[in-house]
Image (cartoon, rainbow, N blue to C red; front, side):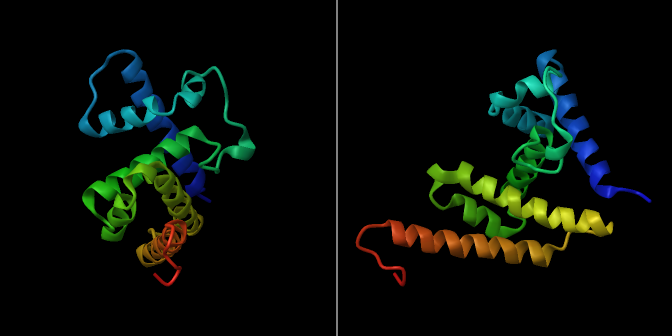
Length: 157
């Protein structure tokens, strides 16, 4: 039986290692690889893993908070989705309070990985309706949180 999740994790790792190697060797990079390279450089805490000096424990392999290959790959997917405005509500969610974009991207990564895991487990395409519904949940939670954080505004606000 094909383990789609393991296959996905190996693909994410191979892509990151390819771009990291090209970056370190000053090799040519496509536009997509350039975007990925900028994400790699923005996460120096994981460069030892990409250099092969540290390993991702098996227990962390499917955790985007602890697996740098998966984290960067999902980060890249979220950034591409936002740039292409697909789904449209994602770009709007990330544009709110631009100074907190990093926090928001990481929240979306968790949602995307949950939805991707479900589809990989069943060997089926990503359920876009479920993904968008979960993104709407993030957006409504963030709006409520922001309203509560603004002095003089009520939650109903």
